[in-house]
Image (cartoon, rainbow over all chains, first blue to last red; front, side, top):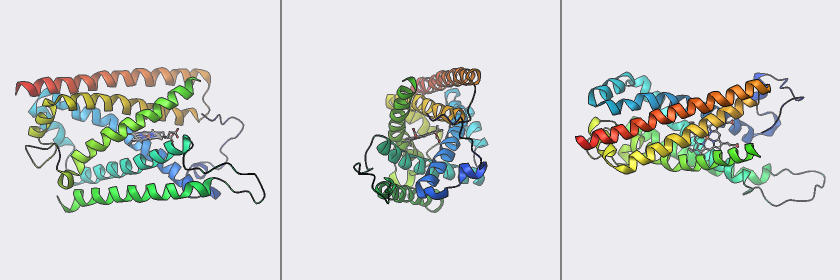
Length: 145
Length: 124
Ligand code: HEM
């Protein structure tokens, strides 16, 4: 874990949200964080809502009744999208952190190249896959139902 | 050292979640496209489907595994984010205790619910 002492975030919210010169992967980082927190919030409520099944059909019906309606359908679709993004981006992060898909080390000769160029294809492939899962979800949520 | 070990668990938990949450999302939200594990009713969360799944030991076990993995992964992720704020030693300690105790309580409660739903389903 990085210690941030001595490197205060002088840009405030923009320092956290903005990609600066870091490009695509920096935005994926922000989205990964937002979706992680969103999923965690949903999941903690989900534990209580779904535990009602242990108390029988009436308790289950009451519990499901409180989380139904068009607003909740849209909300659940957002959770589904967050899952699709976080899952594929998480696989990308795991691969990269374990040293895959970042290319071989090279001599630091000017003009310097970073491994971001090597990583970019994986990021694009993962986002296309996440997009396809989101499309399948949208079809099932809003068109086939 | 300890953080490295916890981080490895975080990554492994992500893999477990990928498998079981992937299945869960497929059952609940790609129900028309995939049509799996909803034998009694077209609506995935209909009581009859809940009972059929709860009768299968596989779901009781996989819900408990998913519960544990997601609690650890999510709360450890939250801990990482909050630690980036540059907390003092006492705040870190307090946060560790709160998240650990909170996570364990939720794990026991959710596991009980999964087990009790299975026991109830088998009597129906
Ligand atoms: C679908 C399977 C999932 C995979 C493959 C996955 C993978 C990952 C990975 C690789 C990281 C970053 C670890 C690092 O950079 O060291 C991460 C962070 C995180 N994940 Fe997940 N995850 C998954 C599901 C979830 C779920 C269901 C939740 C909510 C309960 C969640 C909450 C978080 C949080 C809060 C973070 C921290 C974000 C940050 O540090 O910015 N994840 N996940």
